[in-house]
Length: 292
Image 1 (cartoon, rainbow, N blue to C red):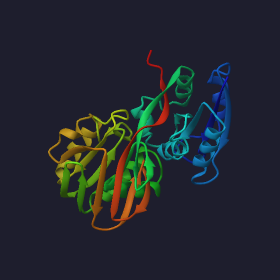
Image 2: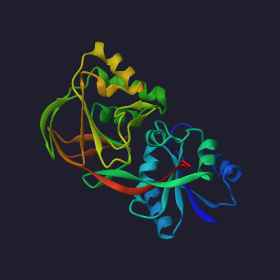
Image 3: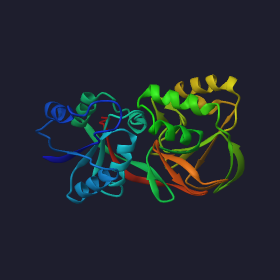
Image 4: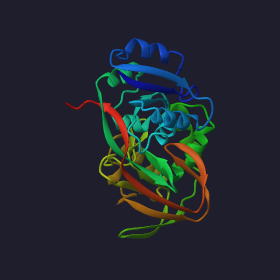
């Protein structure tokens, strides 16, 4: 019997969480797993809980929530033998979508019954872990406004249009092995996984198992070009657009003009002018659908 814990964020996303425990009892293979369900009470609580479950030798800890909940839970599991599971129940669910985990709770739980643990990469920015994407510029500003708005896709779109007409690109310096670049950019996104969420692919070729970060640099574009670029996000070919430049790195330092907002897996936070980003290869175990 494998011990498995479910960490539920009661305020993430737009869906009710009060049926999670019932769904787990009805759907999880209880001959294979012995479940424990806990609810977070404050920011950072998921990390503490996950770390404790890992110390107790749990087979897996499952994050029930959005990318922020996944990030907190995974932070408590990096470098351990305990695997991360995901029941995506947030707004964007970018990391889960990249791993092909259903956004329907019952199907995500069913997948756990026939899952396997694989090793994946994660990354850090100034020693703070991220698992999907880290961004500065326009998408960080949108993340900040989205956090203060109504959740869901409608709130996300409203945040985009609110900021699109007033955001001004900044100048950045990027330095890494074979890279020394100064550029003015609308946004810069470091992608371990390819999605922002909602099936919008900022880095279509990103992989969580290749030991690299894809750095998506979007230069300034006209409002006339915005719709075309948005379509490319959902058709997985934004990297072919004239205003997109993609680099690959394992270790990079980025210097910007001013300190300010960034987003880490979709959660906005304030950071300084100098940002050091690096990949950590195979640093996390994740439960995915069994391949064979």
